[in-house]
Amino acid sequence: MIDFTLNEEQEALRGTVEDFARQVVAPVIGGYYERGEFPYEIVARMGKLGLFGLPFPEDYGGMGGDYFAFCLALHELARVDSSVAITLEAAVGLGAMPIFRFGSAAQQDRWLPDLCLGERLAAFGLTEPGGGSDIPGGMRTTAHLDGDNWVIDGSKAFITNSGTLITSVLTALAITGRSEGRLEISAIMIPAGTPGFTVGREYSKVGWCASDTRELAFSGCRVPRENLLGELGRGYAQFLQTLDEGRVAIAALAAGLAQGCVDECLRYARERTAFGHELGHYQSTQFRIADMEARAHAARLAWYDAAARLVAGEPFKKQAAIAKLTCSNAAMDNARDGTQIFGGYGYMNEFPVARFYRDAKVLEIGEGTSEVQRMVIARQLGLG
Ligand SMILES: Cc1cc2nc3c(=O)[nH]c(=O)nc-3n(C[C@H](O)[C@H](O)[C@H](O)COP(=O)(O)OP(=O)(O)OC[C@H]3O[C@@H](n4cnc5c(N)ncnc54)[C@H](O)[C@@H]3O)c2cc1C
Image 1 (cartoon, protein in one colour):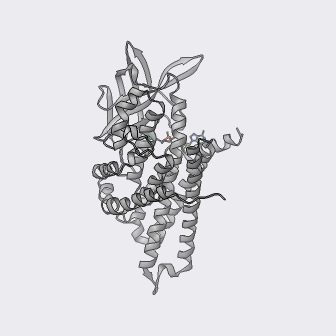
Image 2 (cartoon, helix red, strand yellow):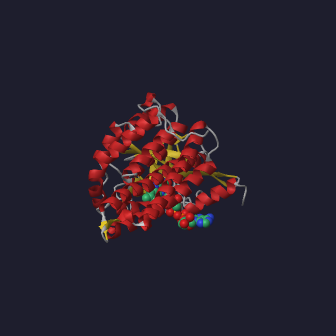
């Protein structure tokens, strides 16, 4: 029999993060969101809880858990708020994970301990103003060696966690050469504050308003030769692997948002009355919430499957793309239905469902758009 039940340790983690989200995040996150302010106090408490170190070994100050545990934490956070969930997802899945997977012992020793504690955040710079889906075709950022330094020129767009007061390092993809007409692409670590590395102002976003997203520019930015992450010319492959994993994490976050809509609507359907009855008395409300629960459930199983394969070391590329597509669809549909159940209050920013509505859309865009997920699935089916 296939067992989808969480074990005792997983259930304990899930419950701890659920309590944290309800008691610490829920009461204050709306204010941060409205002010467009990064929630440093909440992030510090997430760090103390060990969330930033979940999938990393204890040697680095991590919790010695696995990627499934990390996804479980994202799911529970996103049931309450996606800004804090994406801050964790990008810091761990995109920021620290490539250093853990591909970094030298010296790079890991230098950066990972602070990242595992959540005292510092790392960012991942793939997307450029000229293209996100079309990487490497749309890439323009270059790095060349000058003596013992890389000199980086170019720009990046929409980079999460890149401009907070606690951001320590960005790993960016850059063109480092060409051989036989093909681009050689490498990943280079650029510490925050390096001269020639300019962090733009925070974008004004539709959602994820309490998370940090910036445009970045490099002009004659010099970093030591040893800041190359992994092998020369392997950067694109490293980033694709990171994105495959990241898609499972985003899927878990999206499934959490879908479940959060159910949580909110169940409560409201019992509280709100119309025409002499609770909203939940009416079959149209019951059916709408039943559909929402079905989507949240299917979404959860999709990311469980992808994460379980990832942890078991089995191929998971197709399952990751399916999970990202399925879960982001569920998040969008549940956010739309959730706001409808709340009526006018669903359109008021002070209600969580309004935040969920604003936060859901980006899940169809970030870490590979829904069209890109379909391309990946089709290719895995041998098409194209
Ligand atoms: C809030 C936020 C945070 C982000 N954080 C990060 C981050 O931390 N690091 C990072 O590197 N990036 C980050 N991104 C960037 C994100 O990954 C990209 O926005 C995404 O990959 C899409 O790229 P694009 O915006 O350039 O859109 P495009 O690639 O220009 O796509 C535009 C549209 O065309 C479609 N399209 C493109 N090519 C095809 C094709 N061949 N066939 C069919 N349709 C196609 C797309 O699906 C999309 O609908 C973030 C984005 C947002 C909004």
